Length: 396
Image: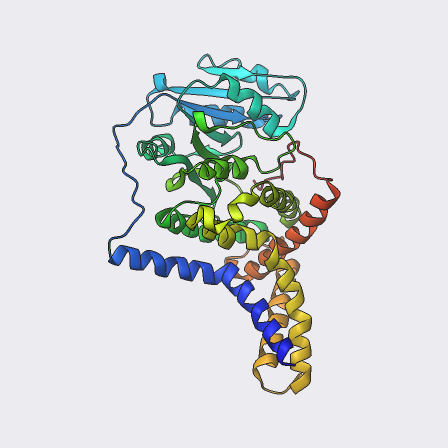
């Protein structure tokens, strides 16, 4: 009985720490450092203005070309210092032909489809500027995004800069949009605090940049190219900084089914990344970076979903010992879990119904997020996740 209680509290602590506790701890550390003026302040020179490359990998993105190019050409950065490069491996919908109409754009096309990372590895051979900014074809960038990112690189300790992913916020939304939007708002806050403490632990592929000299050829079966590329930069002793005002905006997944498909791929890639970046688990070598990496990323993709599965039967056994309907700590905690999963079920029922009360979809999105880790784990074990683009349908 005592062992069961101890096991329950260990499970509960891991779940709490992963999703709430780390954020609280991070906030407290930041507040203390601000109070005593101890900080990881990046020395930014706003006059720093090197030549940069906006690098866009694309597969059959004809429907986004015009909007993306219009957006790119309006970015607040000297046009003679902004090189726009598209790599369109495998595209057969007319994407490269349409891009050839833009004289200030370089297009590197290959008929063979080798996945996004294949396109990135090939395309990086043509990049000659000191900084390269990666962006997706279907995301629009904030007007000052390039300048704000570049400014961060004026500090020699910065090797990578991550922009913010923003989901178009509707007054009322379905489950996928509401859940994804709230999730990214929370993630953005954690990233700001991570950067202030030391370094962000992984960049968002929608918008991030690195020093070109730090790019390393990435294995051709890599699923999370942005995550691996950015953290390998951090492994070399540079920091990953974050600017929420440098942002890429896109619509949410069309529905939860599409979001689940996307998150299963991310989860499979997350587990693959943990294996390939296993040296980052060495706290004695990487110190604060390892602490942040384990707390913010590793637990979410490994231990915590398992804890969520185990905590239900363990709390049931403890509640059953004192009486399921007796008032007691373990019975209350058990029924709170049941209530939470009932709320997730309600979210499933209301999945495609727009609502202003977006908090209704949080339990459902949380459930889907952790379900995707379990499914992603089995996909990784079976090695059945394709490296090719598998774009989720987006809401309109």
